[in-house]
Length: 93
Image 1: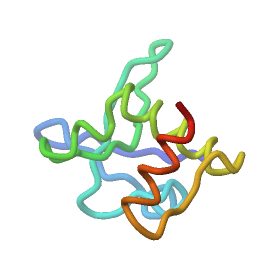
Image 2: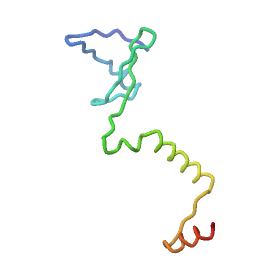
Image 3: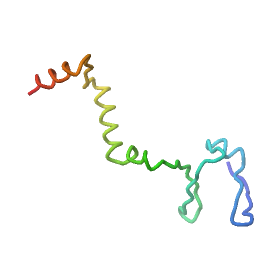
Image 4: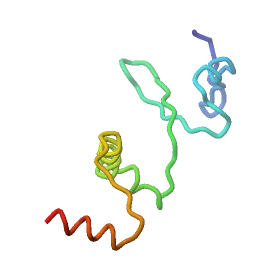
């Protein structure tokens, strides 16, 4: 899919509706523009609140992946009480 668009005053361009829809781009979305092989390429981006940034760190995301693997592999247990949890932990030592 390709379209001819015009650069207007201030360097602005209008993205054709069909392309926005195909790419899932909506009003208010952010796009990062980069030069790749001499061509401008747009990449959809999300802005993350500072108080949520920790969740998207590499370390946190690796931990999330590990937890998902543990759950899928059945490496987890549920406890009715804190005492039950502590008893289980004590039995492992």
